[in-house]
Length: 259
Figure 1 (cartoon, one colour):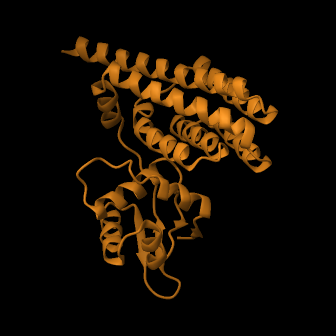
Figure 2 (figure 1 turned 120 degrees about the vertical axis):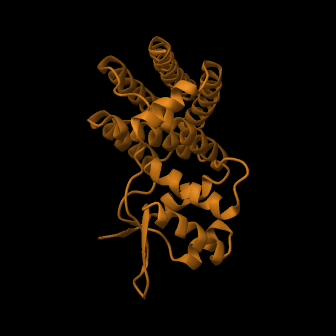
């Protein structure tokens, strides 16, 4: 398999995912969860080569033995493959794809109150990230947002579109130049990803609205208008939450009809 070393920015995001894992996991399982989540979100993609075990263990703050346990678990799941030797290392083998049944079950079983609570947190993170980004983003940040906005707009696959939307939200927090906001955004998006992927397809009107809202956020950040950027980001976040709740209620009604 052809491989490319992961970028420093991808490694930074992987490290910021610490804390997103469920409670009660041992350290090796926590690291496996971090890497799996990075693959799920598209931070790590097929063909990406992880740093050497000694470097990655040091970055993660764990022993090489613990890291090897994590990598062994990922190999068992078929997510990475490892080769030995001077040019060896671990390479991402495939993208994580959950079944529609698994995804729909999770969305249906997540309460409206829990979804709205996630939405409130998302709106707060998005609003403050956009506000700070309007005053702190450099040209490279804005160009990256433009790129993600275009990739989201042009995606024909629903899961690829959601992945781009998630990465766009994280990129806004990166443009805010705040590692804590970026970490919070990453952990929230990791939780929301599978909920959004429960949808069999989003209607064109909503997809077009999301594209327009992304454009508004980027335009406000580019113009340095903090108040407008915050308002645009909050509007987008709340719009997404309301749509997600609608799909949850639809699935719940369908489940009730089938009983």
